Image (cartoon, rainbow, N blue to C red; front, side, top):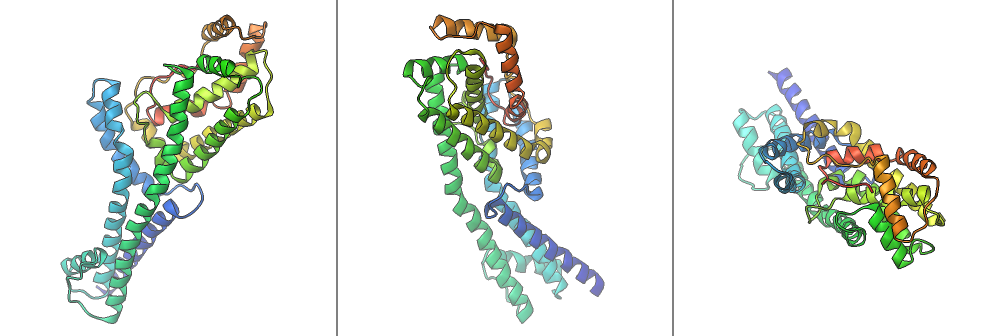
Length: 347
């Protein structure tokens, strides 16, 4: 029995340390580090939502169901943390000499929730009860303190997504956005708009890898998506570079580079860590993120009809467009499937 108690106590210590490490790495460590414990929790909750979404007979209903996934997963995270800490301390108290698992569980629950309903005494046990009470408050405080940060990042992201919808039409396309840029004068020499989009991409990369649950927060309007917005900006810049007889400013090039880096780094973060989620989820309409040559020609014809100068060599323009698109198309397609993005048109 002494050997068994020692083994159980050691396992409890490891469980508590692992859970505390997961909490710190999730909300305190300023680095995009994957936390395996959180991934398992999120994947388990996602499976439940996939089963519910699978019973829906249309995308609108599935979108409504999946809109609850990220908030529910985020709120569930500290509940699982507290449960694991409670289980770890239960093993520790039993290893310290409590006569039954029931008493150990009662003491652990009382300490974790700071109820103070037990009369167990002893210096060593009291030290552990106080430490458990402290950890319980710490885990809840971590989430509550970071909720404003998370929702501020979400709000900044969605402002740009909503403004893009106003500028790029319904459904939003790169052709419509170029038309707006041309009529507003931003196509030739106005770098302010492109600088704002560069800043948006930089914030996406930072926030969606350090707080990955943000990627699954859906836009307030069902037809919007941050993945769709990212693809729209990149396709617009790509179309300008490849097919328009228009100046390409240094700011446009910086924005395009920032966008490629952003979507690829978010993609690489989820490619291995969340592969199970992308395989198990119920997809929405297949995201149409890969334009064909006829669609490309139609887009150039539409731009020419608006009085925008296009390059005469359509074949060279198409080849250039396709070459640049390989830098971000794979990442966009993966993220669109992972987040169940609404159906989009590239051009």
